[in-house]
Length: 254
Image 1 (cartoon, one colour):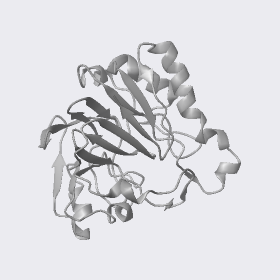
Image 2 (cartoon, rainbow, N blue to C red):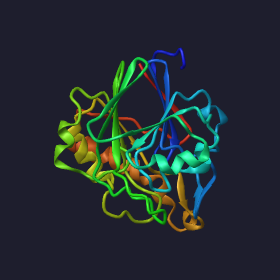
Image 3 (cartoon, one colour):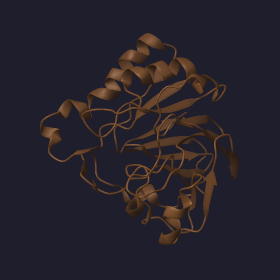
Image 4 (tube, one colour):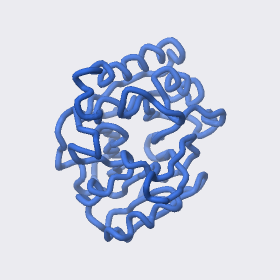
């Protein structure tokens, strides 16, 4: 565990973040390679320090752009893996043995912080694998409280997930030109702020991976979603501060 006591958030890209809170280093849904199937990384390169000395990995669901085995293999096999119930069978054949499956409402302790699994409105089944499992969000309770939504759409109980929320990490787009059901777009993500009432919102799930060749046809989809989110948020939830972190950059919350 890191000795750093402040909250540092590094937006690796897509739904991958390095969260350093209370001296604990967490990775969310890590994708740490330039290609994932037909998707190519469009932003800054992969920093080797992002996956060093990780205390735990939070995996929200089994979709290939959130549970990426080649990326996880760069981690120490003893790293604590926290994921929805039913996904451990995917990781065990690759040598990971410190796997903890969670269900909605469950909590676990990780040193000075607590991880809480929350509901997410998203189909988390892993295509082509036959593995079925729920999709989760996570609330990290420490010196600050952080909500990592993973993938989700709006749902009525979102306003009851956590009281006195400091930071909401909300998806605002996906990896292609359209969004299917079970996702937040910039407008719905801004509406989520009315329910969550965080002090700070950081848009994620944008600007990193895109189908090969589409960057030249639809370049604005790599940059516009977080800007649109900030515009909607200013109208719908003006009391919430929005901070856009470019993929590869770090933000320190003082």
